[in-house]
Amino acid sequence: MAELPKLSVRLSGATHPRDCVALARIAEANGYHAVWFPENAFGRGALPAASACAAATTTIGIGIGVFNPYSRHPTLMAMEIAALDELAQGRVRLGIGSGIAASSERMGLSAARPLAAVRDAITILRAMLKGEEVDYAGELFSARKVKLDWPAPRPDMPLLMAARGEQALALAGKLADGLIISNMCPAEFTQAAVLTMREAARQAQRAVPAEVVQYVPCAVRLDRAEAHALAKREIGEMLASFWSLGARVPSAKAALLCAQGISERDVAAAVARLRAGERAAVVLDDRFVEAFAIAGTAEDALAQARRYCEAGTSELVLTFAGGRPEPDMQYLANAARLRG
Image (cartoon, rainbow, N blue to C red):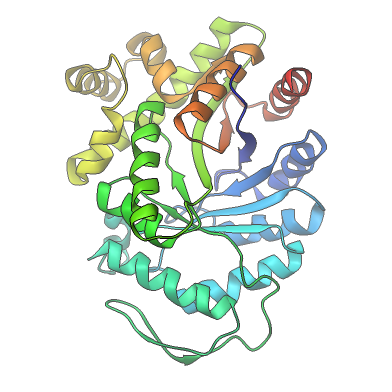
């Protein structure tokens, strides 16, 4: 039987920071590997909840995924993430990505040349965490004789990169310590993405990044039909926005369409019906659940998690659907412990 990837929990900006603390404690008590905090434009910032959870826990990992250099300069990233890691006593990992261009533009920021932006960010950030004085003139971002005023607790903190397109995946292999894969990317995409990243690392004659962190919605219940209905609702809330993103970002569309048995016509028709007000439970069939979620009984969910592991995912970051994450987290964790 295939191994399980590490199981972690995603705590979104839709969750109040105090509730994040309670969920992080439950995740820690139930053996989850980490809690991850996305940061989306105009939602709650990730740092307050991440800091509170770091202070309230002792062993669980703290992940930020992702910061982008357009809205947070790489020198500021270094200042904030080193301080957070100091608070967490060395449990932090950071994901860096170019973000959503449309959101940056709404802030009056240019999101041009995303690969150069991420390359500059990782280069500056890594050097600052090592305690070096950074004198770097990048293509988009620079640091002129900049150094942290105190020693960062971990010069080798893992820096992961969010990537989808071929060039971005290759850059992750050449530069980052790991890869972050977004929601709405099926396992078929993951398999191809990991191969691209690994080949780029080999060509660069560097160690292949070991961490492949993937976000995925999760609906687990004793009643399989109930879980599937929850998963469809979660997918339905994301599908239209990711389809719109795909109209602007070809790699986002290509990732969606990697799902076996789901055509472009299928996705377009589903999006049109969802936008017309039809319920996701009616519009989406089980192909969409299989492609874009982990859903069913706990045993179903673990079998699906193993499929992601076979594709190259080392850590699944689960967004628990359905409004009652505490018992669902415990239910899945208990099954995972029984199965090892």
